[in-house]
Length: 322
Image (cartoon, rainbow, N blue to C red; front, side, top):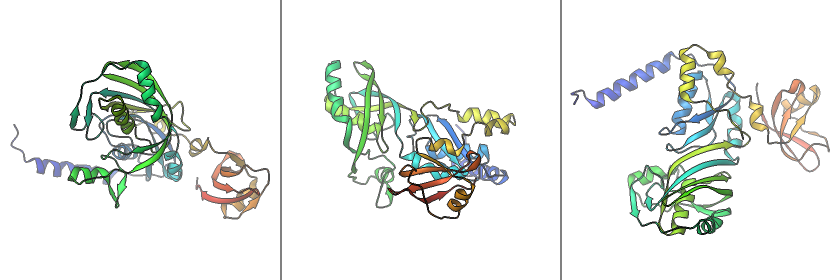
């Protein structure tokens, strides 16, 4: 056992990290990185590591993955942070491993076991029947250990403090649940869902429907609209590229901001129309698609987001400075 003072070690480590941060020469960088997040790391921690490796001045992620979870975490740098909110609201798909017979306080394997029950014999038909009420537009209660805020404070902070919490219910949409594997005490499901859906809550509610309780033992996010077939990269791969001095190769991993707008209707403006859009002027063309649109100018350059009303009037909403 070491005689070193743990607090001093932590302080020394923090000082070293701060020293490293002060030596990083951050730069203007615009684009989207499709990160394959590893387990055991929060989404924000993964973002900050990637931002330092790229030396990006500004960065944001597009919706948290639980520390237990792995898989796709789109990271936005520079001007791409302006569309992070749009990606946050996109459809997503997950592969989930569910352990039956145990209920935990976090609804996943990282929590404390609250209740252990025997697992009955569950037929494929009974499992499908239990999944039906969890599909479509449903009311879902969030886990008490979640980033949702109550009174300006995340629920997980209240839970760790021991507060009594009434987790909120909200409407979410589950497009489909596919059974990939069924074992006596373990299930593998593929879930396609809309924004705000907690897969941990689905596992918890499925366990209750089956009468034995359940929790998530492993979770991987497969895709986020519009990145249906993502070519993901890990932090370890990025670290290796930094050590090799391959900054050009790293930058080539970034998708352009426009890639994040692929699901939105597009309108193309000429040079004069582009200028008017960029200075905030409204303009009308009845042929333009209605709703939120991605606006492009000459040379296929994305200019921003606009809102087109029923008369074809385009109102600038957000300008990209690329």
